[in-house]
Length: 196
Image 1 (tube, one colour):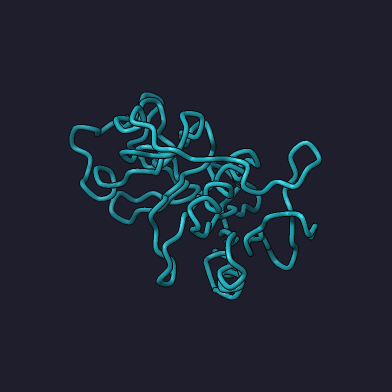
Image 2 (cartoon, rainbow, N blue to C red):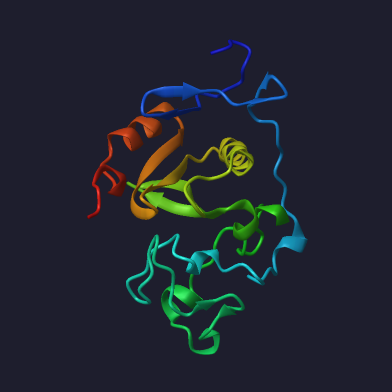
């Protein structure tokens, strides 16, 4: 690792591979500043329906990766007026939250990631990101990593695993302090168990 790279003890590691991101051939670390934007406090889902398209899970309304909500249509929610409280009325991705630091281009259907900024994982406050598809696009992941460093909050992101086009599990990757990265590597998650 280059000694002039200001990592603040942060790294990305996934199954033993340490990677340093580069932009235009230079190490990437802490290049963004995040500020509150009052225009970002009254957003609506609009055409975005990715949280209902089967990239997340709900036992209440029966959807999961590879199995979208049966009420999700090309025009949006088919039962919007009568949708259940949990999860439909209560869930807000990070992009929708009042005072969200996420720019417009990171709306889930554009960024291809569903982000939650205030999650808990094994007692830690974290940022979590679920891909819309198999993986989170690199540009989105770079933004999330920079934001995680800025906020001094670990990031847990997933990769959806498919076999023959069918969802079979996911792989978790931790980004943040080395002890967090190691804890994620040592944890047993759905990605460690294949669904049949």
